[in-house]
Length: 249
Ligand SMILES: C[S@@+](CC[C@H](N)C(=O)[O-])C[C@H]1O[C@@H](n2cnc3c(N)ncnc32)[C@H](O)[C@@H]1O
Image 1 (cartoon, rainbow, N blue to C red):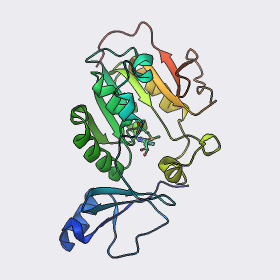
Image 2 (cartoon, protein in one colour):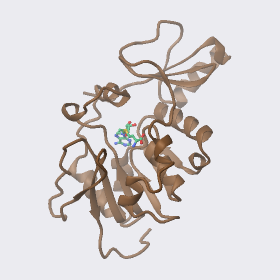
Image 3 (spheres, rainbow, N blue to C red):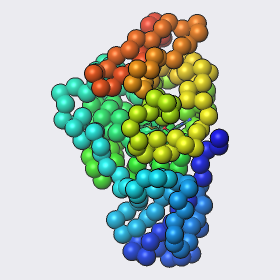
Image 4 (tube, helix red, strand yellow):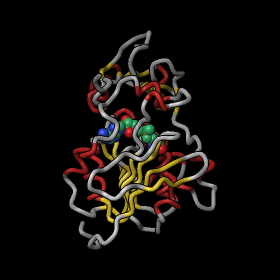
């Protein structure tokens, strides 16, 4: 399976000149779509009178929303913040931005977050949503990149923590959500060993991988095993890095 091509469309209420559609779509690395109906078999981004709307096959179109991050921001200590033993000013690489919920929780806890997202339309959707929702959202630095390429180019210990939340494998996905709709367009193996090995090398203190319910942490030959930590509801595979020279970045 190959990565999806998003479409990009506007509605009349967005008041975008027809001539601007092509350049905007090109900037988003998406295919411009004029007129209706909208494609039902591929993901897309639509700029309408309310803002950017995400379309995923088989799902209702959605505006960005904070989801559970809304409640997580009110917790004394969020499970992910606890697992990372996060200190204000820690540099975190979030290799899978998605809707930015985890990145937002980490930024609100004082982390300096750089987040990567492989799909430009999702990056635009999430950055627009985050910036209007919470002041910490404006402190998240994000860019379009494949985390495999980005990690391979980083020096050892470049970030205090590396966090990866890949889409769950279909068999373990459980409830249907936007990710399950997007997952039908697989990006390839979930977390190839080479990516994990680079992530561990780039993490100065902690590598954390979000796990599907009941999923064991991925094996990393030659590296110490991960512990499973988190809460009753959410599980993380955690590798704590010992004896890395400080601030190799
Ligand atoms: C399950 S979502 C992450 C959800 C996110 N943690 C949150 O709190 O909203 C996974 C995201 O990672 C992105 N992704 C998948 N493979 C990637 C890669 N190789 N590099 C960068 N982003 C990737 C997907 O497009 C998707 O947006």
